[in-house]
Each structure stands twice: as structure tokens, then as C-alpha cells.
Length: 219
Image 1 (cartoon, rainbow, N blue to C red):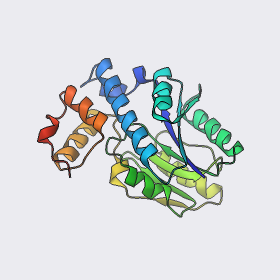
Image 2 (tube, rainbow, N blue to C red; image 1 turned 60 degrees about the horizontal axis):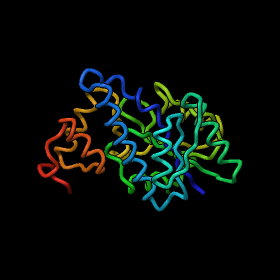
Image 3 (cartoon, one colour; image 1 turned 30 degrees about the vertical axis):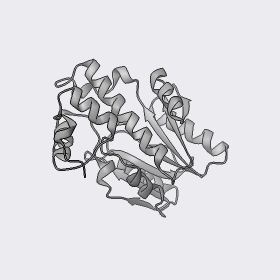
Image 4 (cartoon, one colour; image 1 turned 135 degrees about the horizontal axis):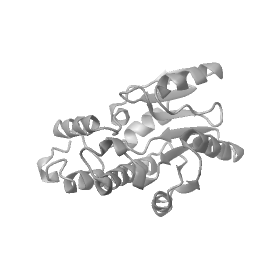
């Protein structure tokens, strides 16, 4: 069985590096929209048996429950919380987990299905700065390594566990949003015809980051 885990930071503290272009309320609106679309895409993916949201944020957990995902309250940091959630799933007999970050504005159920159905022991999608945006692996096989350069660290952790990692090229999962430059890349992608989830479109439009939806080509 394969279960997706979506870690969500406290929404009020998310995306501080976007402060030059968005105030706190705007940042919260944007990350909440990204998260809701990632959650919806995961729930729509037929390759997943279920979806869990790992967070200490009450609102994020409430949204998970409302959408039909499992709310997994974890008070630790990112790696400790994911390690704990993965162990909980392993104890239930879940053999594989797929970790998806909550800030992937180009996410699609099809892209999630591609990584979910990978035949490799471990498969991951790296972010532009070397982080890990998506990772599928055996539940509890190794400790998660999120942080700077985590894509390479996850590969090394897989090798240390005698597992073979595969780095996948999935543009729909490769763009995460941390900086104003990432927002510019998102705007360019939308202008080039890439689609985003409904909540993301609404948030980007209300924040003045993209034109009205009718002016965006949706393939």
C-alpha cells in the first residue's frame, strides 16, 4: 500500500522569504491555496491508497479532515514529524510512503501518479535549489533528510539502506515557491500555458500576481 504524506508548516509563519512582495495575510492566503490544490491532486491520484497531512497547524489539519484526508498532528520539526508519521504508517502495515510538499503550484494528479508508480526502490523530484519536492520510499527505511541539499542527502540515505534511488524529471512537481524569484518563474509558467489548481488561480488573481483567469490560456 502507498500513502501520501503532505507536511504543512504553521500557515501563519509560512513563506517568510516572500515578505518583500507579500504581507503576512497574503503569504498565508497563497500557501493555503497551494496546499489545498496539492491535497486535492493527491486525493484524485488513483495510485495512492490514502493521503495524510502532517502538521501542528489546526487549520491545516481541519482542511485535511474536510477534504477526506487523515489529519496527523505532529509537534516536531519537519524531519522528526515525517519520521514519526512514517513509523505510524509502517506499524499499520503500510509499506511505502510518498512525501509531497504543500507549495507545488503546478501539481497534477498525473505527475503524482508518475512518481507513485515508479518501479525504483526510491524515487524523488528535486527542486531548483537541490531540495526534495516529492519522494517515494519504503516506510521507515531511512530517516528523512529535508533541508538544504536534501535531494542528494536522500539519495545517499537510500544507498546507505541498500536501496537504489531514481531522480525523476517531472516539471509539474519541480517548482516550489519560496522566494520572489520562484513567484516570477510561476508567473512565466502560467503565461506559457501551464495550468494550476483552482485555489491557486483564485489566490494569485486576488493578490494581483496574475491577470484575471479568462486571460490565461488553459491547455
